[in-house]
Image (cartoon, rainbow, N blue to C red; front, side):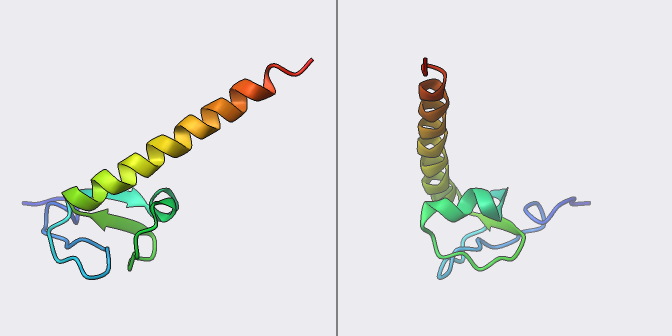
Length: 75
């Protein structure tokens, strides 16, 4: 008995990709990656597209961290 859409064989939600999904993310988290997404609420992505999204999320986290660090240095 499979639980969840990924385990049931959901396909990747990137336009033109037909590989099986390995992860699901919120659409807001995946929106900054620049990929052409099909889904409404949750985004199901294959391994290759997850790597792209993960890289963009890492860059966003670093920039946010720098922004918070800089705001603490105000006199």
